[in-house]
Image (cartoon, rainbow, N blue to C red):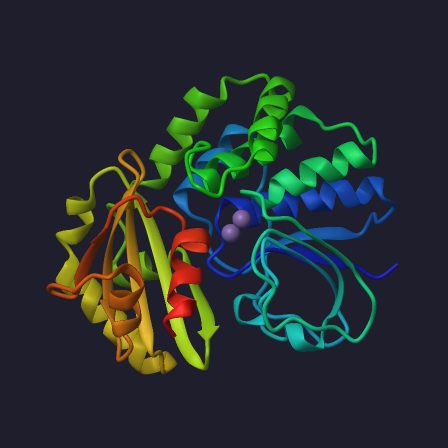
Length: 307
Ligand code: MN
Ligand code: MN
């Protein structure tokens, strides 16, 4: 049997990494022994914390895939966010919780999408549906992903299914998810040793909005002003990327995970999209966005409407 690669999106977050590892485990039970968990970029500090905690190794890094490779996509479906060469891969399965965009295959596939807070919530359901036992380590990985994507069940993307999954998984992993979750999220807010360039690429997503090339990056912090200290350098890095990647808009969202607000640094020729979407006037290329924490639910759709 040829190997089957499973990976999440570029600029991987905790959900993309954990979903790959968990999906590879699930596939073993479903009869695919040759599934390999992969990643498309460097892992962040939050994910590192979680992997170390549960003593699980980082998935293998791949840059691109060759024609005809069998793959499973988790935590994404848009080709702009996927592995280089994805157009010519054989997509066997997709498990995701994002909008479906510019996605097509030539052959039938397994596609499971649900508007829940995290891909791992859907994977949890797949274990239950298939009556497969969840090992404590796998439970810990799924739990970490759900806590990450929902900001400890506080994000507006959180559903009753996410809450139920977290409660069940915490029992299996035998941990106090509130204590563990806060420590894990805090590990991810340590941005001190990143360069401005790294900062804007930690969690960046390229999306097409009515023909506009839009990149939206996000970082979590416990103090927005700590990040804004580097605004000049951050803007320089953003302007460089706008030039190199021919972007129409770059939005860098700095999210305060304690107070659930964000500040955005916005550059490019379509900054009007952000001004219209939130009914704000940018000052010094910045806008404060009260209550905004979710790119998926509170940024992407409103920008799209104003593209
Ligand atoms: Mn993700
Ligand atoms: Mn996700």
